[in-house]
Amino acid sequence: MKHLPSTLPLLALLACAPAAMQTPSPAGGTITVSEARLAEHVRTLASDAFLGRGPATPGETRTVEYIAEQFRAAGLQPGGPNGGWYQEVPLNQSDVVGTPALTMNVAGRRIDLIQGEQVAVRASMRGVDQVDVAAPLVFLGYGVKAPERNWDDFKGQDLRGKIGVVLINDPDFETGEGDFGGKAMTYYGRWTYKYEEGARQGLAGVLIVHETAPASYGWATVKNSNTNTMFDIVRRDPTEVHPPVEAWMQRDLAVELFRAAGLDFEALKRQARSREFRPVPIGDATFAASYRVRRQTIRSRNVMGRLPGTTHAGETVLYGGHWDHLGVGAPDARGDSIYNGAVDNATGVAAVIELARAFAAGPRPQRSIVFAAWTAEEKGLLGSEYYAANPVYPLETTVAGFNIDALAPTGPARDLLVVGYGQSELEDQLESALRTRNRVVARDPSPEAGYFYRSDHFPMAKRGVPMLYVDSGEDLLVGGVAAGKAADTDYRTRRYHQAADEYDAGTWSFAGIAQDVAVLHQLGMQLANSRAWPNYRTASEFRSVRDRTAGARTR
Image 1 (cartoon, rainbow, N blue to C red):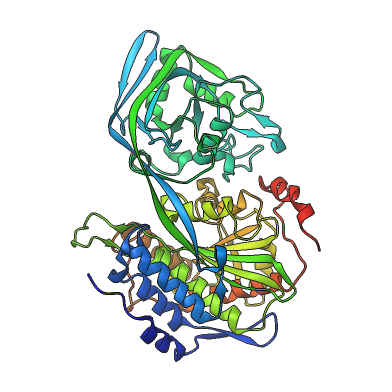
Image 2: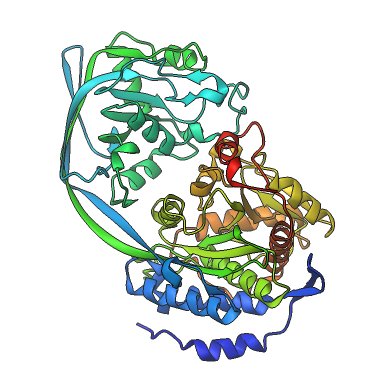
């Protein structure tokens, strides 16, 4: 094991780092975004000394202390609760003990199910030591209740104590048109929503039918993600968001189940695309699950720094990125067991640190700027979820936020990708800022995959805070779109969530990341020196949430 390097030589190195880019500041003068500083932060955070930055490990201690020191050196004030740099994040860790007993009974026939094969049952996160559920099955279409779309798959029926079988994604996915934005996934299409709504409906469980295209991933991903250790924040009442049983089922099992009950799966799936759909009991079929749960509470930390505003200090512009990665795991073919997470997400943390330095070095903005490095993103967006559930700064008066997750060190691009394009008015401001730099917005090429709901901005977004999630563009100045797509494919195939996601001094360029950091600084400074309150677009599922808190804001 290597020892953590002292921060003093690093700070000395960064102090004399050459400026990579000078860009006009909206508040006057210029700001400098340094490629060398960005590279050095990534090199350090992705070094073996940080042990893959696993939460609740020695790697966490080294990581959060490093980020806090960089925030301090940049000129920020501590931004956590009680005047410190950290927000403590308690996490519940749950595991299924042994092999769960899982069965279906339909038309007098018992079907024994194998965990990870026909079904993937998650360890309960309701704070219990034992799960024993046996309940009738009912088909609930897409399991959606969306008043703003005049859509209710439950139709007011009392479903308490039953287990709902629901489809993944939205009612529009198959046809590409309808009340949910066509192919673009809304939050109602995400598996997290299906479970949360099931809990609100009083269901004993939710079984999500897996199909590769609407899920955007295969069964192997479902199996690996849902049959291992589960994590959740410590909640006041976990039963509000978790039904007793949360599980997935293979499509083939669903087809067999429906057929045995005298039902046609495909026909009912077509019916579920209509707002007239009503719950359908699946004959006399029941599902039973019995297993023990091993629980413990671990503690991790968000790192937070703040630059107080001059005249509207109670209003906040938020920048964030997750500091965690996968820690130490199984060795790869090279024998490397440290999952360094250089791109994912040492690049994002480096960008947040450089943004903090740029803001602190320039004229003080009117509104406050908060910089956050979130924990446990890789375990389910849990650090940002804990902050959103326990905000240090009120969400009602958070002007907007920017999420930075996995920037590409491939050089400057003509475009900047907006993940989940079409959500908020922040996109219009971004397009205007890019236009002054002869750049353009690239729209999310896979809106049906729902990537907008899979990163750390989302816990704030679903509570109404306008959030912008950007990613590196693919239309590179050197090599164009072909080179950008090739680099992205290579990363996702050979390095993403693998031990090979390591810092590469020989081939990486931080010029494009510096370019994107400058744009994000420009947007934040414009918001911080205005009286504007951006909102979600009228078609967004989060517009009504933001509107309900309008009384807390003044112009």
